[in-house]
Amino acid sequence: MNFSQLKCILFIPFTRDVWSNQWGLFVLFYRFTPAFWQKSKPLLINNRLILWDTLNFCLMKTKVFPLLVLLCSFALTAQSPSDYTIVFTSQAKVNLHENQRQNINSFFGVALGRRIEPKTDSDWVYFDGGGFVKFAYHSDENMVLDSSEFIKSMQLGLLVPSTEYEAVQSIIKNYGAPPMLPEVEKYQDHAHFYYFHAPGGQVFRIVNSEKTLPKKGGVLFDAEKAEKYGADDYGMKKYVFAFLKRGPNRSLPKEEADALQMAHLENIGKLAQEGKLVLAGPFFGNDDLRGIYIFNVDSLEEAKTLTETDPAIQAGSLTMELKEWYGSAALMAVNQIGLTLANKSIMD
Image (cartoon, rainbow, N blue to C red; front, top):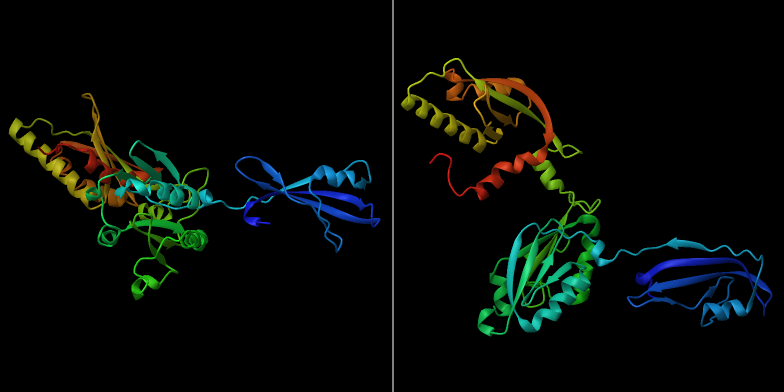
């Protein structure tokens, strides 16, 4: 019996072998296949093995006492490849010959259990962490790299939790994906990483990560990011909120007001680059409340020191009110994401 396919055990207690008049315990093993549930041959646990073909035949040859037969079902769900956490947070494209399509689906879809979205001339393989690799298929040999050339191209890293690393590595080795440069000492340390050629030649590496934990509720907990952004167990952290209010000195000539505004924006950029200012922006309208800052600092005192570097505060054009605030640590990524969304600079 292949116990990797074992899904359920049904126990039928208090059964008697009519030939030997001995009591025993029948254990019925069920295996799951994509087509249907198949019954394997029952085992009689009383120091002897009796093989019968079907459950019906088993019941015909036995007398069951008492009449009430207790069926206990225990789920022994073996971990399937799709249960493993394999993290890739980027996007990549790999050009392959069209004859590799079946191999890609066999390796990534079946062996590693990844979700594959098929397109007309490509397969998009998705990983935990939101990343994917697009395998684009071509009939023209000139459009793809020779497998020997993949070693010179970008090596794609897959992060695997340490609790699952050996299992995922075994799947890759058992599939027959060849290791990269096995004769080179650098690539022989399979305890921490394993470099291999996927079908078609593209080099991947799985990395043994002690901090990346399995998925919870379909969402991947990224311990490295949580530590980087200073998140607590709830994904939150402390900030200091600064409310920018209209100051007493607002009557400036246009040229001075424009220069002061430019200096104000430059200071915002400086604080953001230093990692101290997480978010900044004005309110709409012409009320006394002009805008907000969110500081990545531990105390009101440090936030006050930073606000005093603002030329608009120094000139009396703005005043600030500070409040400690508890919010999502994901705000720490806003500035970096914002750089990828801006087509123009606010300073222009």
